[in-house]
Length: 170
Image (cartoon, rainbow, N blue to C red; front, side):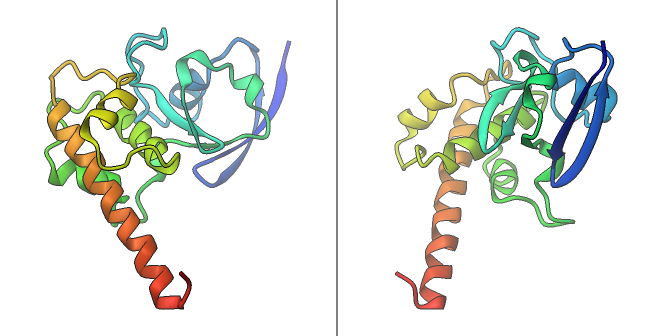
């Protein structure tokens, strides 16, 4: 049974015919669309390595059937940078040394972006650690990850405030 779906992935429209309706979003991204930045860790929704944003919300792509996402807007790690300019969260992970081996980093970054856009990051490191707890780092780079989330959140808030001041909005 073939299922036709339409997805917007990293800003590009994709019309996809799925030969198997049981294909997960993770397998679609990695195996069919060759977007291999999203990692397959546990394949059970326990490690967060496969985190992507679907309609602005962070999800474990290994637990989501691609067929159930028809019409969704999906962002993966490959769609963050603007040419050579990194997304503020990517830049913060580098500046704050938020990774070691790097395997979990795409999922950590996508989860951090979701956390910040949800307005939950704030400035409390313990809160950030709790809300990022669905993403496991086997190397133990949690200190740098937490610092990166806080730094990126602050930078993004300052940029938003600066834009409001420049346009006269308050």
